[in-house]
Image 1 (cartoon, rainbow, N blue to C red):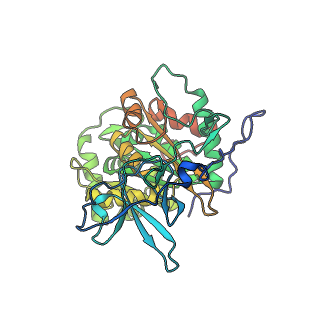
Image 2: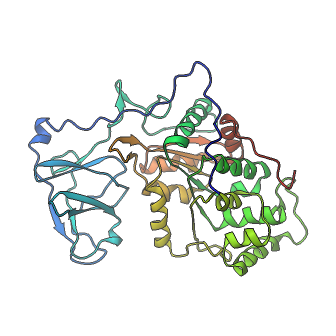
Image 3: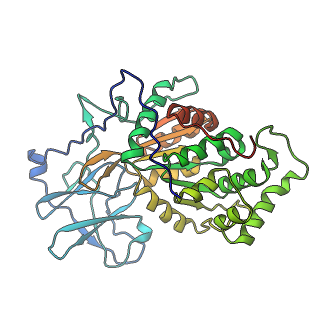
Length: 395
């Protein structure tokens, strides 16, 4: 069974302008500086995993490389990687953007440390400028958000996000990056399950903890031994998550555990039921872990990027390290199947100001930060979309 996108989402507020994506404006390649710019310099990789000196390191912005006298957009960029140039049978260039660890001997990569086109490489940071300023999902600046704190009013941000999610449900791909805080709250699990069922979740990136404690909640109504509604510590509850991990491992997979133990609620249950892809990246601190957890950090990063490649909106919730990792893998734009360039939106949500602002401090992605706990966040967003959980086995 897949997510039911036939259920119509709640309509926008009366009088509010309908959502629209900002138009992309490519650079003026007829300008003298760009028209006269040289082709980009290339160098051949001589050792696996080692880039030649002077390699061009990519950003999250749209980037253009000049070859054979023409400028070409690098469609699948990311932070801190190299651009591999390949040629098709007709001689037309194509590009792969890969971390230097993935370079192989014989690859040809782009060189250059200038980003203004003077070395045949142009980083285009104002492609979504409109009426004198770049725009985000609701008409604000599509730039770094500074000074976001618990005193900030986020009402307009919620309105923008709700409008964006209505659009993305029909036309985009929403990737959720989730920390384990969801699994510790009764309502957060119910509302997130309902969001998945309603078709607002196209992929999930998380770790062993989110999956373990969500399954513990579904199976035993506790998370780390605490009742997910009353927060009371249950007798011998510290064994609960270990028992769940052990039972899942005995079953061989999360899906098999859901079937064998008749799990019928929660985030992992709904991901499996709706066939929504997820990646669980392992950590050195993991218990178990669950069978689906990817223990090799580089394999996990590669699998995360596969889901990122499809995303047009990324929402990161209560997980600093996963948020930073995803931000490094994520461009600020996406090239659609028809060749249209559109923005890729990223939201960082956490109760700690430090966490939501760290992504911006690193300069890794233009993001909207919301300072709140994720339990309140998902409840507000779901209700704004008209998504209401059905009563579960716990009432």
